[in-house]
Length: 201
Image (cartoon, rainbow, N blue to C red):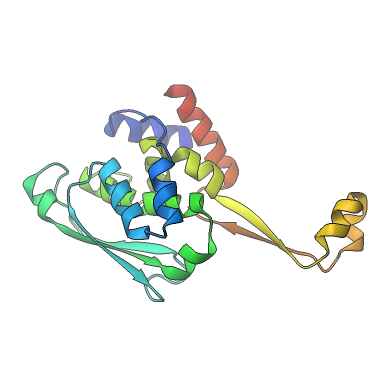
């Protein structure tokens, strides 16, 4: 499925794009200019529509870090109607506070990739996996590689674990490892897709 989707999507998107440089996005993230990050990605994706951004405390799709509101029938990309349409992206403040840079970027790119697929009326526009692959095709695959999943360890005694790594599993049973994921592709699927795109690029 992944290879089929990549071939279909890349044919419609003008091929697989070079990797996006993280410099400007990293700087904006360090400044906590999250609206600036979204607008930078919008410009990078060459989306000319009007975009409002809401940083929210709650609401929207349950457990979703972000969501986008747009017309049911999107005007065709590049037309005057598309450039005048208004779209709103909402993103949870708690998500922005709690998760790392790469995951934040990949979620933002995912939401704007919904606009990309809707604006070209692509047959896969309702497939969330295709939306992730679109963001990766458009150059955001390294953010997906590093940001689709990460783990946080709490409890235990990190100092003792370094001294006795062979006993870590039994001697420090109060340790809790929490894994955070984003997107609709498993980590192995992200790695496979990104490697495939880099080979084709």
